[in-house]
Image 1 (cartoon, rainbow, N blue to C red):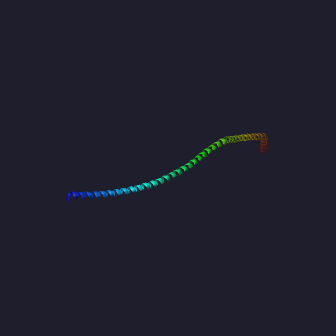
Image 2 (cartoon, rainbow, N blue to C red):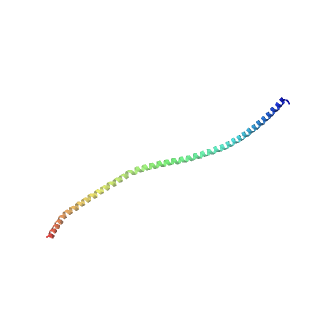
Image 3 (cartoon, one colour):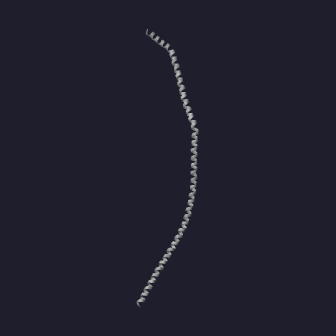
Length: 150
């Protein structure tokens, strides 16, 4: 065997080994690509399901928000109606109540003034009656004292 034949055998073995490594590497790449394709399909399927579920949840949330918005609108209307009713009631009741209180206060003052003047007149009459009857009483009292002292 000559060196040329020996070199040809070594090159042939090296080519076969390289070919085996390349075949194994390509086979591994093929398996990895198959798994990657399966994973992509699973992700697509799950993603589509998740997006469908997400759309359903968004639609439900939107419907619930519409209900809440309706409730808030009605609450706002009720608050406005109550405020308006309160304002109108205040306006309707304010003047008669103030007038009634003024009349009651004035009547009370007038009644006290009338009673005071009546008491004053009665006291004046009583004092006048006492003054007219008292000189006789003082005479009788002083004459009694004189008669007792004698």
